[in-house]
Length: 488
Ligand SMILES: [Zn+2]
Image (cartoon, rainbow, N blue to C red):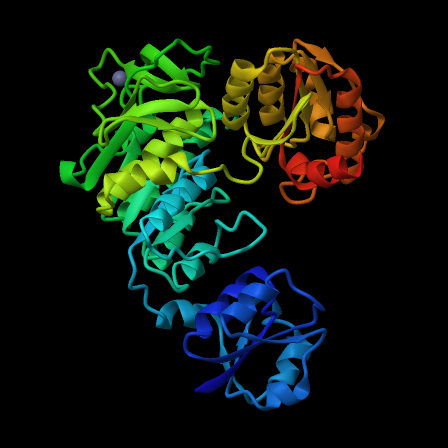
C-alpha cells in the first residue's frame, strides 16, 4: 500500500481528504496544530498522526502528499514537498467514485434536522451512514461532496449556499445526489428583486437529482414540480391539525401569476393549504400527516401514531421530508416510525439546556427560523417569554428589523448583538438593553461576542420566574450559551 501524508489534515476539508484516502493507502495526518477533536475518529479509521508541525522524515517517506486547499499557496509548504506527487481535493473528487445512493437536503430552514432524522431512520434500519464529524455547519462548497465519498451504505448530505448561482448545482453534482429534498423557501427580508434569483439557486438541485421530494405546503417549492414527470416527484405535507395552533403568518405571491395567494388553512408562516384565482393550488401530498399535535401525528404510510421527542410543527415537516426520502429509498415503514420517534433533536435546535426557568438555545438566524421557534415556544410556555437575540442577519439591517418585528410576540427582548440593538425599535414588547451590545462584532455569520451573550443571559435570568422561558436565538447563543451557563 502507498504511504500518503495529508498536510493540513486536521482542518475541515483536510480531515475528510484523509479519511477518504485511508481506504486506499496508509495515511498520516500532518498538521501544525498540536491536537485535534477528531483524534478518536482518525485512530478508529487507522489514520496515523504527526501533530505540532510537519516531521521532515515522514514527508520524505511519503509516496504521495495530499494537501488541504488552504495550504496550496503556502510557500513554505510548497518548498517542503518539492518533487513529491501531490493530491488535491479536486483529484479526490474526480478519482473517487460514489457508489452509494446520496440524498441531498436543501431549503431555507430545517436542513440540519431533516438530515439528522433521515440518518437516524437509516441507522435504525441497519445502514452505515457517513458522518463528517465537523463541529461546523459543513454544508457548503466541497464538504458535502467529500462526505458522500466516506465509507458507508447511504449518504445524506446537507447542501447550503452562499447565494451564488451555480453553487448548489455544482455541490449536488460533485456529491452525486440521487434524491433531493427541498424543505421550504423563505423570502425573509430579501429585496423583492433578489427573490427570483434565490429561488432559482434552490431549484438547481432538481437538474441533478433523479427523484425530488417537495414540501406541498410551500407554494414556491411545490411549483418546482411543474413540467416534471409525476413519477420523479414525491410531495409531503400536513393534512390536518388536531387542535388549532396560533400561526404567525407570512404572505406569499402566486409563483405563476404574482397575485397574493389565498390560504384555506395556515400551519406555519407561509406553509399551508393555499390556492390562487389563476388555478394554482397546493398539490395533494403522497406522504401526509393528520391529527397533528405539538409532538404527535399520524402518518398515512404507516399504522398508528408517531410520537416525537422533539416538539414543533416544523419538526413534523422535517419528519415528513425524512419519511418521504426513506420511502423512496425503499426503507421498511417500521424503521421510519422507529427512526422518527427515537430522534432526540439536533444540537442547538430547540435544545432545552435548563429547566425552571426553561432555557432554550435555537440556531434560528433568519426571520422564518425565528417565526417557527417563536410559534413553538409560545405554544409551550406558561409564563413570560424572554428572548436573548444574538442574531446579526446575513442580509443586513432589513433582516434584523423583520426579526425584531416577529419578536413583538415575546414579553421581554434583550438584544445581545449590535444589530439586534439597532433594530430593536421595531419590537413592540419590552426591550432591555445591555451595555456591551453597543460594540459591533461581526465575524462571518457570527454577530455577538462571548461577553455580549453572557451579559444578556445574566440580564434574562434577573427577570425570569420559574414558569418563564428564556429563548436564546442566533449563532452567538449557539456557540457560547452552554459554557456560559455551566460557569454560572
Ligand atoms: Zn396565480
